[in-house]
Length: 438
Image (cartoon, rainbow, N blue to C red; front, side, top):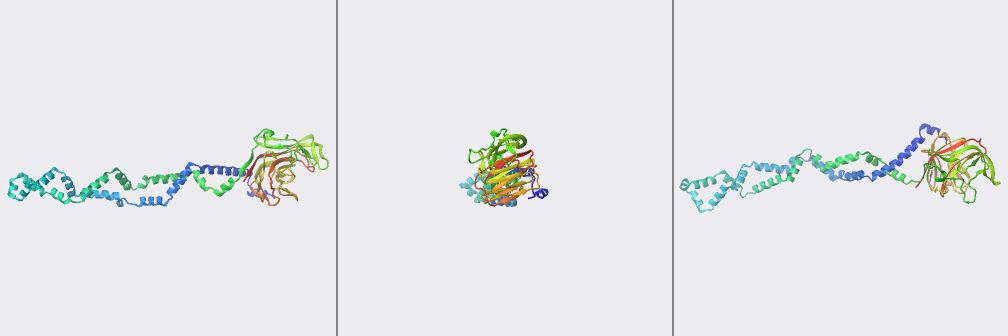
């Protein structure tokens, strides 16, 4: 597969953008869960239930649409004002407890009252004249008009209502044409608007929850950022891994031009893991298919590192960011104690980049061209129960649904020079490795 035009047209995302996407995705998940637990979101949801309820909307509509003149408070005040303007009622209220009325009523209940019918006696008596004058007065007529009426009681009730502090508060509220802005509901609505405008709240509701949940099914099981300085402190061990522990693990092959150097050619430089293939003469063990282990003189040294004792995993997402130089073999792969299964995450053979799966019928894979192995790319493998899917950055480059491994495999990194290659020095550099389990 030639990725040149994919890269040219932007379908193959740059490694920098790919890393930014991964970091942003991880940050989004962390942010989403943090907002989900936040007091602001809890308050938002509580207010949302209130503000978006039919009861809340109806109340706002009623408050906005109700005219003050139609309220019981306005009508009560107006009725009180009407009675306050009733002159006869006000006269009654002034007279009913007066000393003059009391005197008159006592006179009326006495034997003297009959004398009011005698005009001569009235003219001769100032007291009788005064009683008669009061009896014919507007004040007494007002008293007589209202003494058995319910109106004075109603008036007093109205006065008590209107003078009540709670009534005055409610009346002032309904008399205010901008009454909505004085309600607790308005405060709730404004707070809901404030929370709705918060970047975290907007971010939370803009996310695809199913996507978040799907991403969260991938849990980091192996994260290697190469912060260690000594190989002995790392999860990596030099040499091959065999089921038979008696077999020599530190060796090369007779058909190769380099001696694997027991980890001496591997290490970290500024957080980058490096395997150096160097030109130097050494004598080291080599496996010959006919003779077995033999000592051989090599003109170059290199290394192989693996995690057989520290980390293995069956299925999941395997990601590695690397680059290499030198037209020799550089590889990142998954292996077991035997020859199979053997899955290649990345292999530069000096000419092409290759990904694929070794089977009993031979290697099945894909040659990748159009990108430079000397540039950093992220090589990924999605390993499910039924499929193996390879990616370069964001682009799928190979998919297989046969001979899918069914056992936990370890990670391995190696550089070597085959016998048919023109030998030269080289370097395999790995920035990071991340393995996720789901």
